[in-house]
Image 1 (cartoon, rainbow over the protein chains, first blue to last red):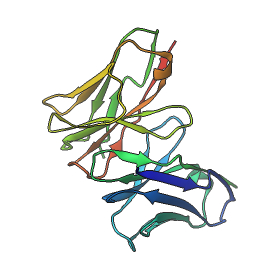
Image 2 (cartoon, rainbow over the protein chains, first blue to last red):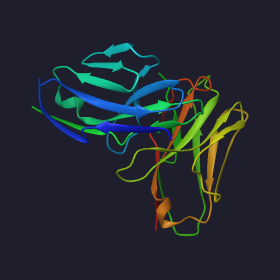
Image 3 (cartoon, chains in turn brown, blue):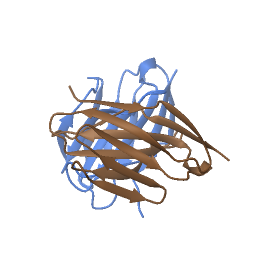
Length: 109
Length: 112
């Protein structure tokens, strides 16, 4: 059965303190791995899609990487506005995204 | 850039009532997905449509039905509402099947 596990569940960082979020997955035939950011009560906001091991994508302070078993979302010098829940999702040969339970990030000034 | 539009944004219903949620995909997106997110939980896939035909089905109760219309907008119809149906309902759209899904702002449904 396809499964996505994210760690840590919650992360508190000081502004400027870099860190990484982990997403481990088990999926039969990975078509894509997706990172979304979700603010409370709002819809997931698309960040990155990764398709194959070794692939990396960057956007501002965020960098996503992918291996055959996990993905990392690296946050460099975070700011308070980066505070949100970060969701990882995988897609197999079906339409649905299978989400992890997310990492709740808080960045303090 | 245009985003996915959902209406209404908030909905309060009594048990056993019906509700209809609407979703307007990003222009030129022909695939629509519905997800349910309970409090503190991750989004769970309900159903998807591609070119106005049902494409895939997840954990959608038999009390719920959905369709996609000729203008590609979609409606999720929920009948005999239960307290446990209280959740955020998200619609997402993509340019094609298995392309990146872009989510709308959601409809918050509260069943009393």
